[in-house]
Each structure stands twice: as structure tokens, then as C-alpha cells.
Image (cartoon, rainbow, N blue to C red; front, side, top):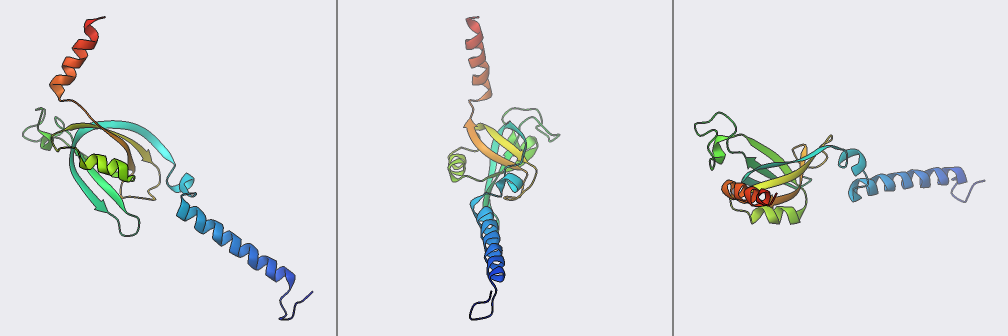
Length: 156
């Protein structure tokens, strides 16, 4: 059965099906529906304690913020093992994908010890690292942590 322009009904249905498939692919990529494959494939989760040394806005197409965390007491620098010397240890980089977490990171002083909760993903769809920061929690100075522990265990 042909219409006036000579296109069969099957050709029209195939064309509509192809357009629908393309629309679904575009929707999945733009809305994060493809996240199960590229973004949501979490390999591990955890946290790291350290000092925020650098925040950077990175990316040409997909923008992400990168945080660099310095650890005191790690590494083999001249001040290795000395508290309060974040430059003596190693560093670790992760991506911040949510603006709320980035704004929180901007408010933290460079000498403030923080705990960074993260997830490691198998596929890097967004950002330059395999790590995605979910939350940043400021920690009290090391001496105060010991005092808090003593206070908690005093009653036991």
C-alpha cells in the first residue's frame, strides 16, 4: 500500500522506530539514564582524612570540580610523620560533582582537618579521576579528637 509520494507504510514505521531509538539514546545520555553503565557503577566506597590543598574547576565539555587532599604524616618528605605538616605526606585527587558539596569545600580553611566520603567508579564518564566526593565533614584538631575519645570512654 503506497501513499501519494510512493512511501510504503512499512518504510514509515521503520523511520519512526529509528527516530524513537535515537530519542531514547539522547534522553538516556542527557538525563543520566545511562548512569547505570557509566556513572553509577560503584566499585568501592570509603573515606579519607586530610587537608584540602586545592580546588579546581575542570573539564571542556562535562564540567567537574577537582579537589586535592594532602595527608600529614604520610610520605617521606622532611616533615613526614609530624602533625600539622600537610605538605609532608602524599596527595589524593577526587572529583566533586554536586555544587552543594563544592560550596561546602570552599568554606573550609586549608589547615582544617576534614573527612571526605567518596565512591570509586569503574567508568569515568564525568571528571578526570575515578573518585566522586559525596560529603565533606570538618574534623576537630588531632588533640581534641583524643580528648573526645577520653571523655567518651571515661564513663565505661
